[in-house]
Amino acid sequence: MPVSFGLSRTRFIVAVLFALGLGACASTDEAAVESVVATAPAAGATAADFVKRDDYCPPIQIRAGTSSMTVYEKGHENETQYVRYLASITQTARECSLVGGTLSIKVGVAGRVVAGPKGSAANITLPIRIAVAKQFGGTDPLYSQLFKLPVALTAPTFGANYNHVEQVTVTVGPNDRNLIIFVGFDEGPKG
Image (cartoon, rainbow, N blue to C red):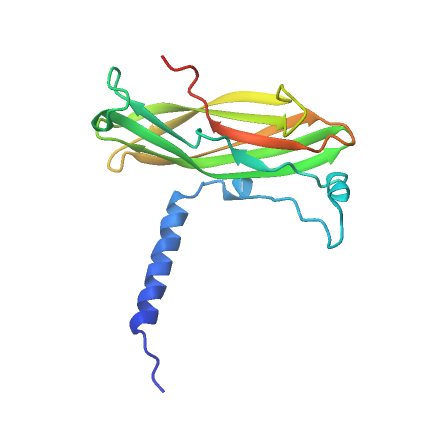
C-alpha cells in the first residue's frame, strides 16, 4: 500500500524548518546554557523536604521589564523609525551545587540582537545583570553583578545570537532556601 506524503510531508518539512530555525537562534554553548534544572521532590515529599535537599537550586526568572532592550538614535527615543538595534533574552538556565553553606550557581543567558531601521554593522555592548535575592524576608540581594557582553552585528543579516555563562557563589544557611535568580538587561538610569 503506497504511503501518502501530502499533508504529512508538508507538516514534516515545516517541523524540520522550524527546528532548524530554532537551532540557528539557539546559543552556541547549548551544553552550558541548557545544562540543568533541579529535579522535583519525590511524591509525598513536603516543601520542607525539598528545600533541605543537597540538590536545591533556586528558580531563575527574567526580571519584569528587562527581557528586551531597544536602542534609538540619540534624540529620537521611542521613535520606531530611529531604532538602531533591538536585543532580547530568549533562554535562561541554571546549574547548582551546594556544599556546606556555599551555593555555587552556573547561570546561563542567551538571546538575539537585530539591527533596526537605523542600524548598521557595529560592535555593541549588552548590559546584562545577574542577581540572587531572597524571594521574601530580604531587602538586599545576596549577589548582583552587571556584565558588559560584546556582540558584533555584521552584514548581510545585521543580527547575532549571544550567550553568557557566569559562575555565581552565595553563602546560605540550612533554612535559607527561598532564593530566586534574576537576569535581565540593565541599561542604568534613564535621562
